[in-house]
Image (cartoon, rainbow, N blue to C red; front, side, top):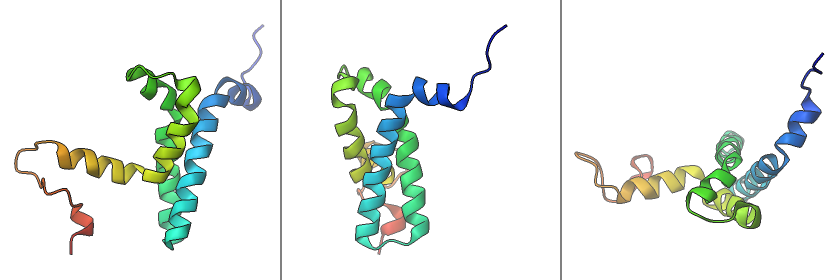
Length: 110
């Protein structure tokens, strides 16, 4: 009979991906704490970055980069830059029909 899959086996199976997520989350939380952001923004950005960094090995292999060698550095960079800043920067460079292509996030316009 097959043994049930427990939490320890799950952590062992995904230890590298969880490491990427942990590094990215710590960097993101430290950066937002340093900027003086409210706790809700610190926590949500940490979770967003951790979820995005979980697939860092696959993202790097998509670009032909060795994920085992550059995964932690890329995760720290993602944590510092942040997911929202990265998405805003990418969409500002895309030619979207009827979109705002001035490079400024609609939320941060003043």
